[in-house]
Image (cartoon, rainbow over the protein chains, first blue to last red):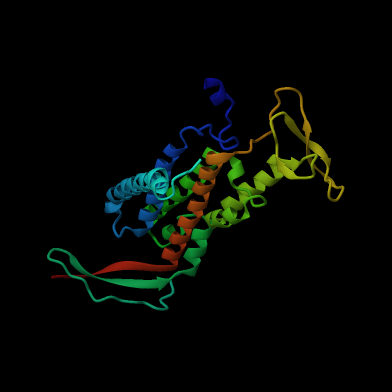
Length: 85
Length: 191
């Protein structure tokens, strides 16, 4: 791991995050909420609260969508169309 | 700077403790151009400096965050043109990163493809296989040699590309907001 980090050249080489790629969706949700709310909030006093709320909503929605797709693919589809060997 | 072409005034809003205000929409083409050149500059030009700084930080944070995750390979006009269309909305910075990648980190491979280097290859000046002119080429280097940048693959490439493209899409929202900018003006009266 240390050898990999030492060999990594930021901005030139990709991050070795293939096993934890889903964690990168958290800063993505934060960045989207940050940019969107910076444009949309009427008063910047509300910015931090609204940005945090949108980030949490986005992450919860992504987890819910992931669960829904998992249940559909792993449980519902085999019930509708059982695999016959 | 501001052109009061089509002000759309709303009726004064009043609350128990708030001053009455009107919202005026104005058309700001120069501010929109500034926002396209540098994310957040449009709002800063209209006097909303703090908002402009927040927009610039968010958009550029996403753009460079994508490059940090997926490497410079996530901004590639030749190989990922559709994604680059979205990334281009970040402005000249996106074109600069792409130009840097095309001219400093890619070269012609022996299979006549202009591409990023593979591990074990080094970049030297050679001949463009298409027109015979001097151009960088990849050759097999000494053991352990690495190209100046690495190609990103799979999920890390997808997420890095998504970050950079979403940065451009969000800057489009900022540009449209500044182009038809609404400003609240208090009338001073209290309910």
